[in-house]
Amino acid sequence: MVDVLAALRRISPVQIAFLGSLLLSLIAIAGTLTLAKDAARYLYVSQQIVEQGPRVAFDLFSWPWFSLLLAATQRLSGLPLELTAYLWCAFLMAGTCALLVAITQRYVIDSGYWACLVVLSIPAFNHLRYDIIREFGFWFFCTLALWLMLRWLERAGWLRALLLQLAIAAAVLFRIEAVLLFPVLALCLLANLKTRQGWLRLLQINLLPLAGIAAAVVWLLSGHTLSQERVDYVLSLVNPQNFLARFNLMASKFAEVALAKYSVDDARRIVFFGLFCTLISKFVALCGPFALPLLYRPGWCGVAEYWRKFRPMAWAWLVYFCLLLIFFVQERFINSRYVSFLNLLAVPLLTLFVVSFARDFPRLAKILVTLSLLVMLQNVVSFSPKKTHYLEAGAWLAQHTRPADAIFYEDSRLAYYAGRGYPYMPVDREQAMSAEQAQNFRYFVLIAKPGDAALQIWMTQQHKQVLSQFANRKGDTVLVIGD
Image 1 (cartoon, rainbow, N blue to C red):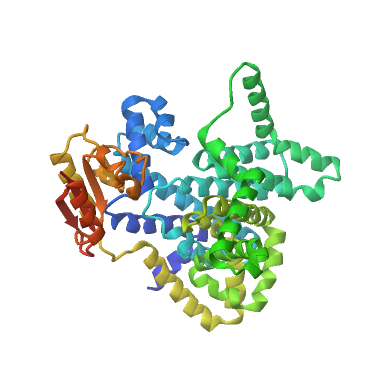
Image 2: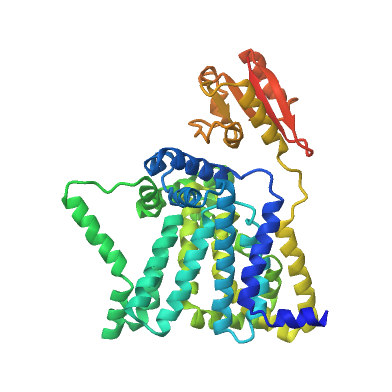
């Protein structure tokens, strides 16, 4: 036992974070039976790229760079696409964890192993290890860019500035939101713009954006247009006019439904702070056991240290929080997958809280470590029933239906497992089952209970019946409905 502990001490926190992350990803993936929705879509697009060439990518998805990466890797390595995707995600996640620990221990004394504990057990991004998502690349290259940014702020240089911008560009290829790091760079330099050196630094970190603007101007002058679906979508989200219109509509609807006439004037304030507090509560909840040290008042002195030593990450946290708030208003939903980047940016801050807490309460710190280890396992080990019924339904559809049949899939993964690709459904379930649309589909593949009274009435009206049904141990059921 002593030899094992001595060997562990010789491994640096960065190495532990990298290897531990790979191990956790392996455990999470080993317990996965079916793909998540986005994962199935990315793999389908990748498969089409392999079969038909890269030109088909943008026809199937508006931002297909991750799928292009998977397709290129598959062609070079010969490995199955699903395995290729899991390997990329696992190594990108491991690299992210290692970089976060390297960043934290560089600027906070004796924080390496605590940072390693935080990185490997915080639920925010660890509970997604089983999935195949673009966020893994987004997180890795954003973290790499922030690490380079911190080094560049210490010692500027044209090469470091170029590498930093290339890292941001790589992150953008996974998720376009990574462009926020360019204004973050400018915000970090605000105090230095009174000097010529400050303006030179600003030029260094804007080489790629300036080159991009110049290329866009040349492209436009040559008679082409600049229109890309994903870019247009993001620009519409951050458009102030669109944002204010959606916010006012949300406030007016809330006032009509929930407020007395005497409080109508407060509707906008209530909605804004409601959304604001919802985001904050999600952030805190995704901290898991590391939300406990946040209750320790003296630990809040670490906020000033975080701002001083990790200014790019602090600015990125604020900018991304504002983007999430805009998205919340525009799309009227938010989820933990989007919020998780806030927790990633806050890893050094949470580590500062934990170090302060452990120093003042060593016995309670042992309990915190135990809780963290338990949460670490909970993030990657699931005892919930698997979606075996998806695989069974897919096999039945492949055998009993034809590719040309008009089929409505409530979940497109059912089509994926039937070997029918990942179709985009132009209507939702309610619309598909309406009197106007129902006649357009020969089969309906629904996630529902067979005894659903409303469904029974609808089948009677449409002269349809349950052709087959599949359920897992939990009782979740897939129904195949047809004539």
